[in-house]
Length: 95
Image 1: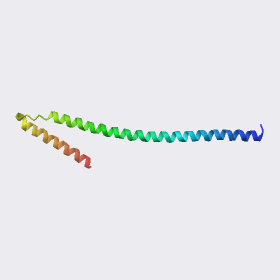
Image 2: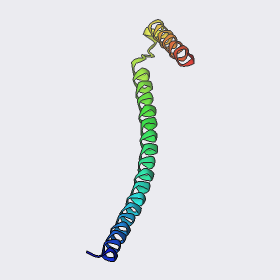
Image 3: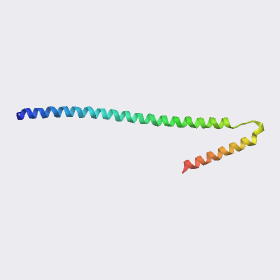
Image 4: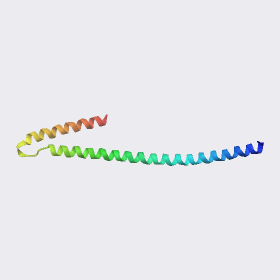
């Protein structure tokens, strides 16, 4: 094999390698963008799930509070218990 053929062969392989590198670089950039977008979407979904869970808790609490005239004292005690629990949660959040 002559020196010119060897150099030509190396040049050809180098061009192929650079072409592959550029394609992979572009693909990597696209995948990073997709990953970033999916991470943002996941965070938004987590926030939405958290909000929905809070709404479920509120609905459960509102259904569990019986506002009949016969049980006003029990209802007041339940509300006070919820207030204490909320105060504990706020205190934990402030730490």
